[in-house]
Length: 84
Length: 422
View (cartoon, each protein chain N blue to C red):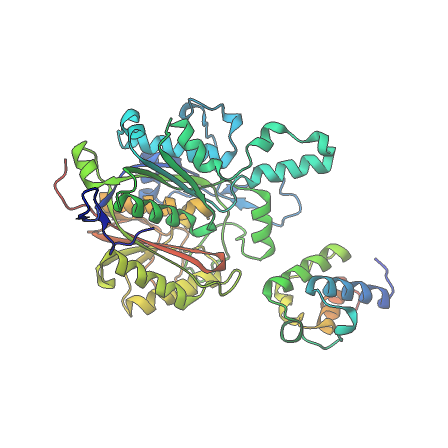
């Protein structure tokens, strides 16, 4: 899918906020899901699954380690979708 | 629930000693054979129940092997129900219960004249029917729902339908939902009830049917093995979902001797705990405490345990954590520790019931079932898992582990019955 960068990043951010039950203004690109937003390993898997469905991509489970904040999510999604 | 330390009051007001509890009948529905004799042969020969899953459409999953029960006809085991009136897990539990009664040569009139407990553990109940109903609703709307299937859904039926099928009326029928440890919970509860004299007989165990929801959940967690289940192996890749049922008939030793029953094994005790530490990860210290509790309830020391039938799912997390707990309790030379999940996959609520049946067969027949698919033991586990081939062994006391999500642990201790055989 040829989505403008800002648009797909916004979608990814909305997914993360929805799953972590936080407001968009509470999260920054570097705030940590686990330490600052109370996420656990199952929430991380939920985020991964929702990103896969939304962007129609496959994210290897080994990428979970890098998905600690929005920056990490953007990197992993871009790599999985070959948007680099 | 009573504890072994408690004494009940007799009608005369004096204290009656706790009864000894024995297993006199067993029924098994498994992917490696139906019936206790067939299950025994499978355990002795290390049979594998793995095949591509056929219960649901597996398109979209990169791999989808499992351990399904194939060619099972519930018809011959049912007199009061038509097969289509029962969900698949209930078909398994009712069939296994009737098998246990027949295996025990228990007269149905005698059984129904006593106080009976029926208790069945499960993870999913009839989620397979729920999967089906949701599919119908999505495809056809609410008018497409099937009333026959909808009536099969309540999980209480896993136990209640056994009572009705066998014509029991003075009965407590309860389904225990402690997931992957539920079989041991059911057996432990039943043993307590018989020991205390609250019931004369108990039919206890567990049942589950493969369903899409559970496969998809484990798949998403990254815990499903692509091909086979390899507990304690350095290259293990996870679980395989399975299905089936195991039901045991328990009665007091006096009752068994009075009717000249065969005795597979004695139930010495059961330890239960819940740490509620993590949704899916097992907690080593909590598991160790549960084993110690079981030993104390059974009145045995760790040195007396001749082998452990492990929870042994074949995931990286379970096997290392469980092995660590075993070392904590047993020290540097733990007993042989096997996983029958290598053969029948993870049968969820049925898992520890079928494992208890395997333990009872092991002490009755004096052999240890193997852990199949084993190539190289993970040094982090460092256990003798009786790789690939069953061995003959002198067994007296054996331990059956069950660990469930949410930190529900249940450990059962059985022993060879060493009294006079009838």
